[in-house]
Image (cartoon, rainbow, N blue to C red):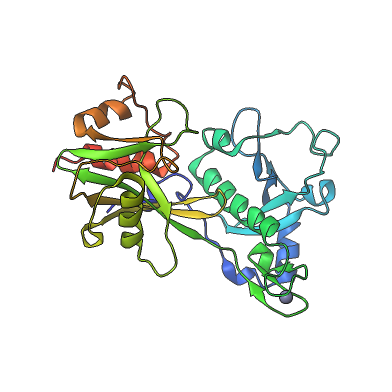
Amino acid sequence: MTNSDLIPLGARPIDRAGHHRSDPDWLEAAYGREDVLILVMQKGLPLVAPGGGLVWMGPEIAKAAPDARRLFLGLDKQGTPVFAAGLRDDFDLDGSLIAGTGEFMDFRMAMTKLSELEANLASTARSIFEWHKSHRFCAACGVENEVTEAGWKSVCPACEAQHFPRTDPVAIMLATSGDKCLLGRQKMWPAGMWSCLAGFIEPGETLEQGAARELHEEAGIVCHPANAEYLCCQPWPFPSSLMIGLLLPAENEDITVDKTELESARWVSRAEMRDVLAGKHDEIFAPPPFAVAHHIMKIWAERDD
Ligand SMILES: [Zn+2]
């Protein structure tokens, strides 16, 4: 098993200090502290400094964006409170007090410019803010929810239903057959990029059963859930998946692609996979290192069984 703490987006987590979430006085004071660290997001995009790295704001953000959503992310190693400020969609950066500090950057592009810790925090904030947006109204009665617990919960003021951020489990896997593994590609991906197959786990299904079902549905490959091997996992904020990496030995090699899911699938040898990861394969390149698929492919490629 691989240490998921080393996988990007989940790496270098801070102390979430959840006991502070229900203490509004503490949160208010922390947000105003001189040393507070506040990352800024708008429409799910992080504010990135010109030279790379997140733009870290201090208490001045309360003045620059008084109606920003506040999310308490935790305490860093020094015990400094860390927050995210979610700006309203109509917030005009250029006309604001924080103009010139950086730019809102496409999340995937930003991932290549952030430290592991920053990527983890931005990823967490993105998931929570997207949840606020998509779960604004009570699912039970339709009244607008009130966000509480420093951003981590919402409560309906009418029927008192409580709502919590969701995390959707996704199996992401390689079927293996001897010295080969199965890669697939979707039509919308950049030409030449191949990756693991993946799919959401359905209610009533184990992780291993879901992985085997997806391999069969998408590529016609039969695997026994009992033979699945867990590798590692990664929080993936698009909007709130937990990507859970597996290997599954295949019972057959005949591929039958479901064209609604995949453009194509193929077996790749371990030697080929090493070339893929080294950027030396003529036809195939791997997803970037911030994606867990890259690490699953690497873990398998580096094995000698
Ligand atoms: Zn309600």
